[in-house]
Image 1 (cartoon, one colour):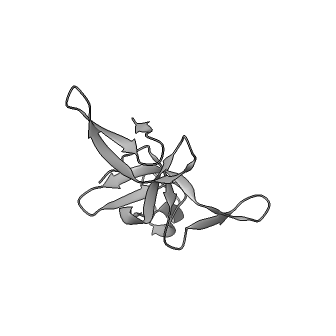
Image 2 (cartoon, rainbow, N blue to C red):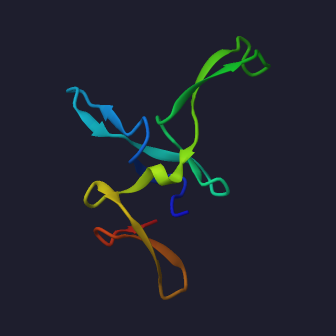
Length: 113
């Protein structure tokens, strides 16, 4: 999996593919990756795939009630956002002179940190 925690991604498939901007136009949904589950090939993206969870009262949450949270989506439904061209991009892996793997954008040769 070439998506890491903290990356900015674009949703390319699913019910959250588009959102509306201030003018009411449909724009692709972008968000920051909060958590990555490599074994199941899923990611949690900020503001995407919101679900309502009913919680019982606990010590931390005295009232309980409905809590809205992000649920994981499949990693194949998101693409990394290339900051140079501000578009979704595929990623290749290159090895530098020290033998360290670096993720590189196919569109603009941008190196992701």
